[in-house]
Length: 611
Image (cartoon, rainbow, N blue to C red; front, side, top):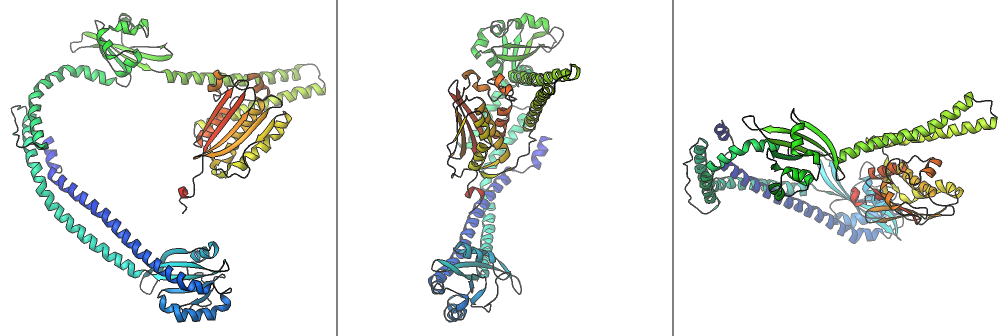
């Protein structure tokens, strides 16, 4: 079956020929594209340069003497007819600032240009005061005619008074390029024919020796190991023949070794994803993969010199060989344990030889530390949410029962109770909103409305919005950034405003009365930096790594008293990361805190595809 498939496949000779042809075709195609492109650019640049030199060297200078082109149209037309009709064979139009043709070497005087000429090029020359260019086609009697449009601004006393518009017929250039392409295609076809002939001749010197090796290999595949290939050269083909003979000599011994190793290798390879340890009945480790050696903290030499029980006792003593044999007597056994700050899941069972006799135990060790941490985080999250909801619910319940079942209360007392109930309800509402926001961020369901903005006005708005709160708490906000700076970023303005306000609110909360909060912004490299620094109470070094965890509070009593949910910084971090940025925090207890938000700067003009 294999021989038939081989015969139906593409032969090596044809492969070599195809490779030669492909390389030649690619090389010629690349050269052709480069030459044709260069030729086309040369002709176009030549036409553009000739027209530009002719117009700028004469007519633009003479037209610069007229303040009102339309008022001098007769004189300008006479000049065009007398001089420029002979110099410029292309269509030439003198157009005033009202988009009217003042003079032309065609019969178009006094007509509007809209619909007749390229208005965009004319407007660009009028408005920007610089030469403009475009290409396109116009419909002729028999076919579309390729054209080039050039517009040159006419200046009088540094003011643009009109435009000299030239329209050139590019048919001749396009015909020349098409003829060049046809010549190139014919040359490429001829080169490919020559390549095919040379490829067949060259490939023959390679395929004939390989055919001999193939025939000998087919005999070996049928069990005849007496095959030997004659070595006729010292090149790669000769080396192949020599190696074939070496292979024949070694193959018999290799087949015998493979038979004894097959059962063990199949079992080991099946469990390579996790740590695998194979132990024989005497307690020797038959095999341990790299993952298992890392978990057991042993080297290859230890596996040869130590018994399994000596190695495993450092990890977990009750995983000794005797205990394993007892636990898996009725089948696969599994357990989970912790050691050295990591959590492991272990599965083990006996494995047998071909006769069904026990020859050892196979053990799979899986490091589930990260998974366990995730489960613990989920458990803590549920506990934190329950706790955060329980406190306001208890308060609402107790005050409600007092209002319902208690003796008649004064209006002032009842109003005070209702105010507390309303405050606790607001607190629960904030918590639920923050949780929903986090859920949307976690599941990539948040809708983003990103656009390019200047970061400075956004910072000024944030400072203004929170300034009243800062004054009420007797904190001083100090804007260090320059109001005239232009720091461009592409962001969801509302979400970044939420991040900045959250950081400023935290700075106000944890800064003592009379404290100072500095807000700065600057661009460095391809990053926009927002830096908010306070001289507040700071954060203990042991807790800095946890400030972005959900429900974490540095000062729990103050946070709850001021309505904090412990989710603000966690939400802020995810919002910033969704924008491709990062948020960093530096703090010293009693010395204040510095929060830096880094956002990618907006692409520059060239990066946006704007020339």
